[in-house]
Length: 314
Image 1 (cartoon, rainbow, N blue to C red):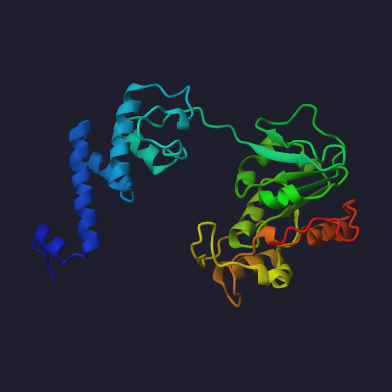
Image 2 (cartoon, rainbow, N blue to C red):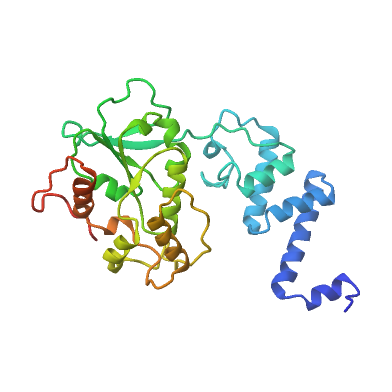
């Protein structure tokens, strides 16, 4: 079948396809006129912003004019004084908005002062247990602690704060994937600690984080992240994400850092095979259960008398 012309093609296309085509071409024309671009270059920008609404499109134009005439190397992205913007609007260095602005201004990148990486941790011994957390923003290479024998990296803040007193130990807030990108840079001595534990959510992302963390060179052992743990705490599972939207299955990806048992749970949580929930949040598991495992299986010097260990089961 031969379609004779564009008008015919648009008439037989779906409404969504027709509207997207017309919108992209309207935007291409507007950009070509506004910035003196060749149609092909203007279309590239329009396609970069194909998933952005009209408000975003016009903000990109406004931002491009600003950054074409102002040096931003002394600012962080949130400091740009452009009316109508939220502080987070520009996004990460590889965001589509930044990419489109660079295409319009002919810049390779917007040379902001990016926020430094940050890592939160606390000393768990009795002397320091109630003191403020330590915030590490540059490599800790001087006056590093020398008596740390145990470290636990915890994904979520509630559980991080609930961990009890332990001598010669530190607790690090992993904060999702953040730890995998800069933990060894900020704490270069972490790999010398003989007993490193990782404990995160039982979901596909939590196990992927574990795999990536080991790929950074941290020889950590996981707790409560295998099929036995899942079956034990399955009643606390959820099918909703943080925005109350349904969790969805996914295709398992390579996770070379996982053990056989961890990989088995990862694949199950990706596919949803024979399980009711795709996520068991770390905070749902009683702290006392985790500290008992640390004491009995990993020789952590934790006192577990009666019910003194707080239980944060919700």
